[in-house]
Length: 323
Ligand code: ACO
Image (tube, rainbow, N blue to C red):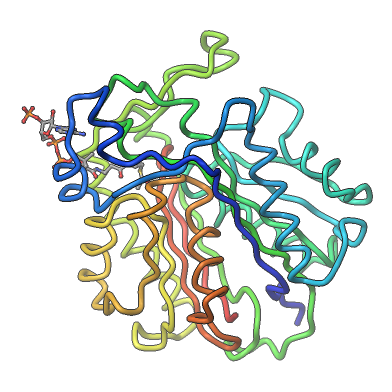
């Protein structure tokens, strides 16, 4: 059975750091409020002229280097993003140009904060079907560009960044002991649109719009949906919670992470947390967290890694992966 095995990983954060105290200088908020309600202490913000494609390219280069391959070996680039450089063409084609992946097919995938897991699922299916052998799966965002910086209920929550993995086809036994992506579970529910959306778009009003959110209701639904989709990942593979070596959640809010972990009965010490330093980087948050935990060797070869995310749409998803 063909498996999509992680061969390399990478990430990039813009240089500029904005602390909670920095925000409190121009919006009615405080470091203590933000920390207490979200666990966020700071976020990275892209420089003027620095675009989603630039962030993604830096992450992609690192992932290719770790995998020991160059761009020409890549068959497929899937970039999860809700903040593309332009309405079209796909930001992934920019990345393709920058890394010299001229043989690849490249496209963006829009599933908001679930974008990385959706992109991983698409790439895994391409690989399993034999349509690609080497795939670059990226999540990259410049959410700072679609925030209403006068709205304290949203502008404190998000940050910019990028991350990604190189997947390569390898023969596996077809058992849950195989390395690689073991399963992905994807969901969406368009009826929940009004709880979280950007109030603009090319067809709606020809502007990018800014984030609008009913935070309390998003919070409530996130905990229920995330624990349910992790259960699906476990049941689908015959695993129990104790089999998980690392839970790598979408980093929206420390309280969502803690409540989900509690509901699932998984120890906080098995969860990778970056939200304190990165804030919510939407589709980039999971590959940024993966990058951190793999680079400092918390995640080791053979570990069972479970990822979960939820975002606008609503979309929600999980992936089980043996590193
Ligand atoms: N600073 C100070 N006060 C604030 C701020 C702020 N940044 N934001 C809101 N407040 C105020 C509100 O105006 C309100 O004041 P009032 O009582 O005078 O009206 C008070 O704080 C309480 O507001 P709530 O919205 O009820 O606060 P809550 O405890 O729900 O926390 C939060 C808000 C942090 C947004 C929370 O609902 C949350 O985390 N929701 C999840 C949203 C999320 O993570 N979205 C990301 C995208 S989806 C995803 O990735 C899963």
